Length: 248
Image (cartoon, rainbow, N blue to C red):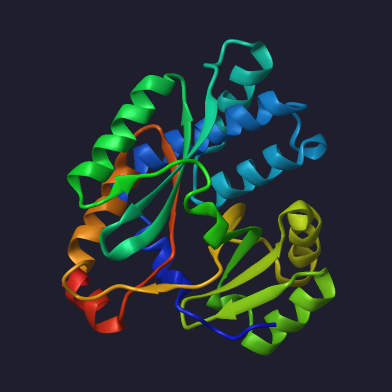
């Protein structure tokens, strides 16, 4: 298994403050509804729905909200969403993947293209960026879940492929088709995960110079703030010094 890298930069600012809590819940609810429509509206019988519900609970989404999202799908009165992937380049040549769930494809395409253009990037064709990433299962535990060695041992036993640990969290990677099984095995060993999801993991990281960092982060933040956008991934590597400047 590989050692630690700065993959945490790729998910920069995913944990939002109370000011955007309702937007986060809206996106979680949308994923639950789509997952419920894609199979049985019972988490025990639908792996994607089970993961969506677990992720919502990890973000303290109220049970009533979760149940309402499932009932929308089961009752057939929920909106119909298209799942779309956009690929483009940000400042400094960084590869960016944007996952969208939308009830209006034209609006989503227009908004994503505009956000790239206004923030120093450009939207590419499908496949322009994704070859630089691996499609993986990603399971995250807080650092308090155990020592690096203990989590590594549990991950190996569960059938995971890689682990990255730092002072904030343990991130465990699996083959994407094995995510549900590995997540269940890890829950037995380590307890409930903070999140378990299918993700895009960069094969290599692109260092970003100081001049490009602010514009790149504006691009990422603007994409994440769009109502249709569910997830944003990038293969960027930002130095600790530049991250500190952003936080300041």
